[in-house]
Image (cartoon, rainbow, N blue to C red; front, side, top):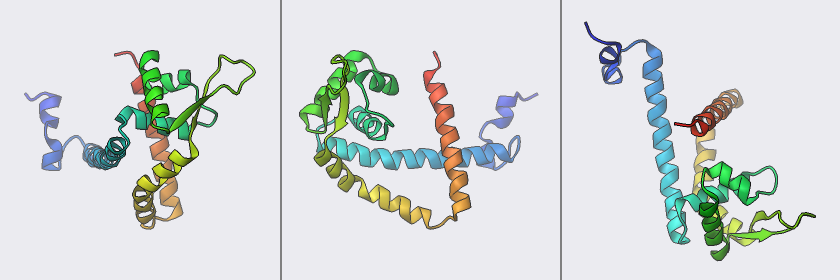
Length: 168
C-alpha cells in the first residue's frame, strides 16, 4: 500500500493528486518563486552597482516602508540579524550615502535611521522598471480582483512573518 507521501509525490506533474488545491498551490508557489527571482535579480543589480549587500537593500526597504522612524533595534528585529550585523549594515549604508543616523529624540541614546533624499531618488530611478511592470500587470485586473490579490499578499506576508519568527 502506498503512503500518502508516495501517492502525492509528483502529483503536480501528473495534474492529479489529493485535489485541485494541491495543483493550485503548486502553480501559485511557482509563480511566487518566479516573481521573487525577478525582483531579486533587480535588487542584486542595484546592490552590485552601489557596492552593497542584498541585506543592505532589505534594510533600505525596511527604512523606506517603516510607519515611523526606523531605529537600529527595530531594524535588527525586522531583518533577524545580530546587533553587530545591523551595525555593519548601517555603517555600509551610511558610507555609501544611502542613510544617515540622527539623534532627534529627547533621549539622546535613541538613533533614527533616515533614507538620504538623493539616494532615495537614485533608488527610485533604478527600480522604476519594477514599478512600470506592476502598472502594466495591474492593467489586466479590475479593482475587485486587485483587492483580492492585495488581501492574499497581506495574509501571506503575515503567515510568513510567523514562520520566520518560529524557533526551528
